[in-house]
Length: 390
Ligand SMILES: [Zn+2]
Image: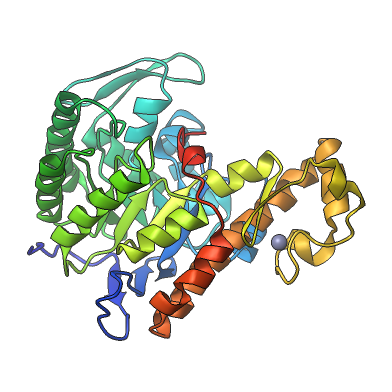
């Protein structure tokens, strides 16, 4: 598939030493205006221009090199024009590394109190104060240009994977028309623009969407409409189809909304380069921390006497300084530090897991490392990934 090359606010290099027909996984390097992102990579989510409970130094210490911020949330509060007047999103949140802003489409569909989608755009009621708003492909691009992230995403119309065919078809065709309008509207030369493939679980619609989106001059390709209520088999088949069609397309592939280590490993092996999810940080705030092979519930009373760190050898803030006993106490007392420490740990665990995958890819032995990585990832937590917005 030949993509039209536009300009170059970003570049993507595939570094995998030699093609390995045992895996579609690839090692890459995405260069953006605010820095370099080694792929496969996970992006922590900073919904309201903050990764909940962490300051920018904490975020960097987890190993994050790029974060995601939500266009819908920042548009509603505090407003993209205010952020622009204050010097843009990087300065506003004091994060000087790469940022990706999402299209806003997913939140319009999943969060807004009521919505009406027509061919021109989406009208919705704010979940914060009930006020009425309208987003179009052009305004979603303008908002993201004002925020000034390294990567903007074309406005799309997502639907749940299990939606009936006519709904999926309608949303997919609309996403294509909106993708063209987004490309036409995008002006900022220091910002990459990614486009979103939809198509639900319908193979012919996925194929049509993949060909259409890949045919536009986007800098990266998002795969939308997954990490919802589909089964693992449905996801695998859909990714097989999409990545197979993309073949040697030179652009980064980003699967939106996936966050458990087991799911990340599966998707990397299917050829995905970028991920984001609220999962690691959200489950951390409920007291669930990830350890090799599974999870630890910090609210369990048995941990109140445990002097060990959450995970031996983990370089995170929580594990370097504090015991399970202390953190278990903080959760029971609902102390704010609990949320910060658990979030630092889960993001560090997730980003370290991605680093392990990259190390195996660089050494050309991901297939041999698969069993060990799978053991570390523990059980898949697909169910927890549903209901992404926060
Ligand atoms: Zn830790």
